[in-house]
Image 1 (spheres, one colour):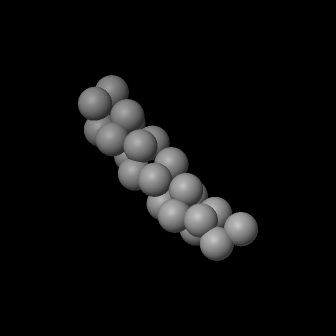
Image 2 (tube, rainbow, N blue to C red):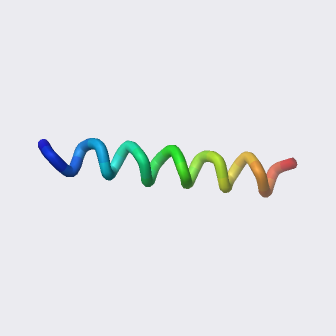
Length: 23
């Protein structure tokens, strides 16, 4: 479960990008 932190970071970046595009 070491990659969990990396996956979480990727999801956060993805969500931020999505919200940015929505705006």
